[in-house]
Image 1 (tube, helix red, strand yellow):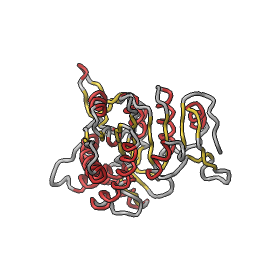
Image 2 (cartoon, helix red, strand yellow):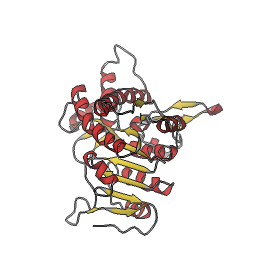
Image 3 (cartoon, helix red, strand yellow):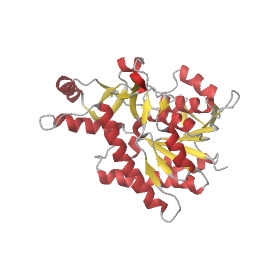
Image 4 (cartoon, one colour):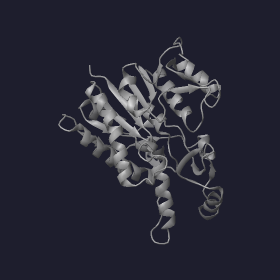
Length: 319
């Protein structure tokens, strides 16, 4: 049976630090990501790809606020849908370039996720989106637009929005059918379009941005994937990050990952959701979750790189 992998790519992989975030830059950055994904295809995996949208959706929100005197603004969840189309196009185009004559076709699926309207995340905006601003600019944006602005890891101020955890992938069955049919599917982009169940089981969009790693774990479980790859800016997870005792971890169990999370080992806005997603995936039946940089994805899948999160209680952490 052909194994299935879900690969989660951060929005910052397309819009990198120090860049303007232009279409040309995103298109060029997408090629390296596409090469890593196609490497998994060549290794025998069926693949679904999900991606972040933090930089892109924040920029889009800023653009629309500056144009409200000319066109009516859209809700945040609609901006999320727009970025799914935008990034889906960028990734699909880059994948086609790398795929060449291989018998596989990329396809992007606009995807919704269900969240709990009573979740406390709606009262605590913690998800950073968009570019960085100075304290003075942040104050101006709060005064002008009513945005919640906060310092992001001492790198500058960003807009913070609610980020409730995903409960279900609405199009999960459709994605699974496409993956099983041999398509390389881009789905649940930006964490998916957040929705809540209304009367009669209808779906209603809500203003939030769902974490893409948690959504990737939900997607991986929904389509029966055995491998979850969380591609990020580091080669391995560090225990004791920012201290003289910082050390890389090669392998740990889901229980160990959850223990480190409870101990506050990982930053809420960066590594914590990745570790939470990895632990949740293996707890819910997944075989292996990997956290590593895009260029090392294939080596990590072979057990030669990255941090591996496996089921069970007794995995030994290599530090």
